[in-house]
Image (cartoon, rainbow, N blue to C red; front, side, top):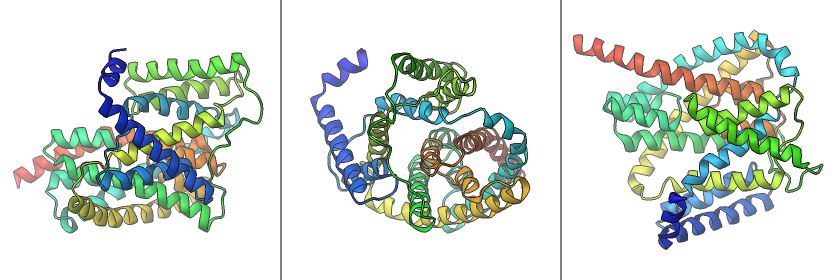
Length: 356
């Protein structure tokens, strides 16, 4: 209530939110009408990003993000069927491949930012590690890194990866990476609607209590997955709600670039093209390794390794009918490994540098 009253008392903020969301809807509808991949999220993202860089007074409703990602978490959790348990044992080998992939990305991308981007060591390190945006900014700033370059590196990496992956699967591979249907195939009963809502609310609370990475996304995903694994629920959120969630999510990501100096954005974008290109090349190489180790479909392995956001890669996996559980698990493990290992390795290297 306090946040709502604060928002209502600031008409300028309401206007910025409405402008941002309005542009998000227009961008999403345009992408959808053109048949472009992941239209509602990418259309909203690029429309609001262009407006933000152009200096328009747009802002994303950041306080709505927990609700939005909870909806998407419940949606992805609904794709966890009983067959997931039968495949879990085979994923141990692919998780080992993932760990080596993270090491390889660090060894390649961090030096790229350090020597090509001419960043200081701390900024280059936390710009190049393939962790979550918020976590890398927080830890990087605490260890002496510069916040703006780290923020731009990870924000642009996510935007660029989503775009590359979505267009690759649509244009090159021929998959239908479209938007969610606006109407559900079957009506949602009241009991199912309450269970899905409960998955979002209870899951978000558990995620925060357990201090999970991306708690309001991962918590609902886990609760929804458990309900669907147990056969208690067989439903998913209606398509129109998911479309709205994608528009809000794309708007929030796009408006993140408001106020960024154009020169800094241009420099970061050039560096990000090189860094993301290197990371995607490694992702493809290690996807082939996953295919050999566990017989995993290469397209599915690429999605599990691509350095995009957990939520966004899950949506693409859902759109091309890949194994959402496999993709989500590997992104969760990636984030956890980087959160735990990156600060430890950085501290060790710093001690070695001081000794030398």
